Every structure is written in C-alpha cells, then in structure tokens.
Length: 294
Image (cartoon, rainbow, N blue to C red):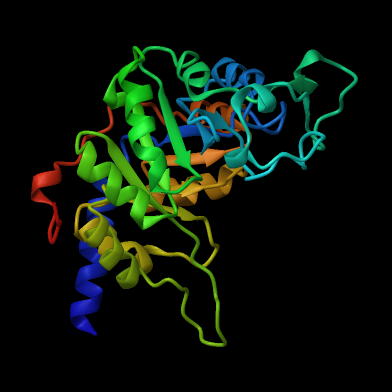
C-alpha cells in the first residue's frame, strides 16, 4: 500500500513537470462542429479557429489513392452508397457530400467533396500538425509513405494514429522517424469494475508494436492511477474527443500532450483566457523508453 502511494506521488510530480506546456488542440476531423467533417472547408476553418493540429480519417481506394473519410462507405454522407476500398478516386470525388449535422442553408461550408491525403497535407501551415488516423489495413502504409515523401511536409508535423496494432507496427518498422500513436477505448466491457483494456494490457501492446504513445477515449473514470504505467515508461499520452473546457483541464492536469476536439475555437479560447501559455513540447527520447521494443 505504501509502495503504491509512493508510485502515485512520483507520477503526480512527473505530471506537474509537464504542466507548463499546454496540450496541443487537435481539431477532430477539422472544425467538425461548424463544418462537414473530414472536408477541406472543415480543415481550413480549424486553422482559422486556432487549432494547433487537425485530425482526419484515411482510407485506401481501389486505385491505391488515399482519401479522407471516416466510414468505409459513403452512405452517411452522399448517394449512391459506395464502398471506399472498392471504388476509384474519380467516382468518390464525383459525390457531393452533405453533413447531417450542418445546416445546408447559411454557407457553402455545407457541401463539399471527399479530399485526398495530398489535398489535406497541403492545408497544413508551417509549425502546425496533421494527425493521420488510418482506417484501412496495413496495406495502406507503403502508399502513405510514398504520399508523404512526395509532399513538402516534414516528419515532425505528422502523427500517425490507429486502433490497429498491425498498422502502428508497420509504420514504426518501415519509417521509425514517424511518430505513431495507438488508439484505445477503455470501457467497462464486463460485469467487473475495471476498465478494459487495462493500462497493463495497453502497455504490452505499446511494447509489441513499438508505438510512441497512446491516445485514449476520455472515459470519466480514467485517473492518475490508470495512467501511471504510461508516464512511468515514458510513453506519450493523448486523448479524444473533448469539447468541454473543464474536462480538457482535467486531462491537461493528467499530462495529456494533445486534446482532440470538435470545437477547437472553444478550447483554444479557454486556454488563452486561463493563460495556459504554449511552450515547446518536449520530444520524448525513444531510445530511453523502458521496455521499448524496436
């Protein structure tokens, strides 16, 4: 019991050391509360609203192009309902997308087309970042790397995120210099009282895949004890999707390096009002991470 209290105390000291650096505000699928998600207007609006980074979902098409759309099919956004991996880029971009969450009357933000990865990369200003969520299998990785290499963006501006351990592992094996973060959704999945996956289970997966850190669904019961193994082993911590400034502050205090939100303007303004001044984020030294499998 005494040892556990000691560990938590050390963790809180470690978190406090990061407290001077406010987390990056990452626009979830762009400024998706105000524009159709995963579209160029949403990404452009996110930059205007003060986002530090944008996040988008990416699939591989039949003709080996990479497009930005959340679902594996287009039915939620347009007709006809096409399966992305079975469709060619030209057919997908012929669709006019409409968001069920955005009023189509007031502005041209309401209608758009499915953008390519290259088009999204081109929106990223110097000093800003793009979080690329891979929705396809690991087969997309070599095409992704080719696309990145043909762009003007630097590796330091990119963060690859995925729920698939295979995707994360493929990224780290083929391009170790790219940051790759494992996504996870801790929930109460059984009648037990413990969140699953547990932090120890995630730690095993982080080591297996070579991931640089974990990005967690902001479950209300996640606390410093749950997060202790990640901080102790020098893994990065990120979280999603948070629109409430008070919840954002909780994760700020827990040591999150980025907070993904549908409302980047709201969180950026709140951080500014509360004088959470940005300083440069420390890059975590990969070679010193305990238990890291290269």
